[in-house]
Length: 569
Image (cartoon, rainbow, N blue to C red; front, side):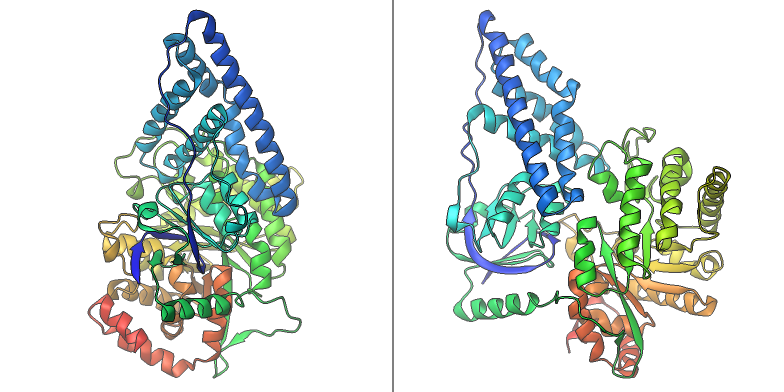
């Protein structure tokens, strides 16, 4: 089987016939308009915008009814662009100033804005350029009366292979019963990725020349966790893939009454928690019988409507829904983990050569206080309905935690003065994702109530590897001995101070690493809710003595390869 590699951005495993999606949009040519034709071109643009607005409204209503309000909110970003007078005025200015056809003006303005967004260092804002590309595609399709090819009965069970997909296209295809997506382009924070996750469909992005390498109708195997796409599988590989699909389809059983805690063979109790990005995943978390939410990435409330910031009431409603749904189980909400260049109208502009090492996480919280006071107000107001824990991202010093606590206390006092009911205290935790934080974990343990080890960024910062850079992606190894030693430091510091510690990187949901993590002393694993069933089965077959011996052997390894071989031996 030939293997193509990309980035797995929506978990899941599928096998099905490939359908290469080829758009029926024609080339866009520059056509000079006569003076008396210019306003007619502006009229064509206006008509296209109005028709797209109606179609988006219908789609939004349908999605809200069938899937949920949060996923429906994705289309607000497209609607905002369509209603942005500056965007439309720029297109109209090109039509009138250069006396050209509407299609050419739309493409020119879209290309210029796309190039501007591509130069932005901050991933969250850079990927909002994808929304503009989506709107440009809608406009051109309407003006040219083109559209993605109709699939009909071919869609059910198919693996869609395309250059890019708009969120509306992904939703439409999902309703037709496709099994997964392979895309050549698009961004990790794009709304199409969010749609795929909400629909529980595997998606692999960044597969170069994918459409030129697949044959329509041929079997394709897609793994949205590892980011691999298998072409031309032989009969044995097809049979194995179908068995895995059948196995994974049972990963989310219906909730069962009276299900007890997850325990190892020797009786050690392990908490299996959910990582949640969008609220539509709440039902998945509940169906998986999670022990709570170990990480809610609140920045997705921003990402889904950038560049606008969510209001206090919008955040309060989201937090209240999340807390109520899981009560009395704990729900850990991480404050906005954003940073870098200008990221929204509520943030002051800053230009950073290296935003990953710049003003992000708690650093941004402490410099953009007005923005974060809104979020902290929403969190404290929602705390009374559930078991809230607040997580502080990108901590690197004790001072940052103390300043955050002071800010939270100030917000609480102001709410109490206005007669708002808030709890006396809320547990505060530190996200350990910077090597420096791991090295001073024994000091941080004195000023926080819990730790959460974020192995994704911890690996990236420890090994100086950008996991989204294809050139060095092979060096990104969460099981590198250096990373394991930092994990060991944090777990030991937490145990000595009597504070809880969990792990919430991708490795937490990998059953192959479960024994290793338990051996390290971890008793709380946070993961995609779709991974909980497999990890629960793995935990039930383990005995702690063996896990501890495995951890000791792993810590003596010299390379990530040795650790990985140890886990598979």
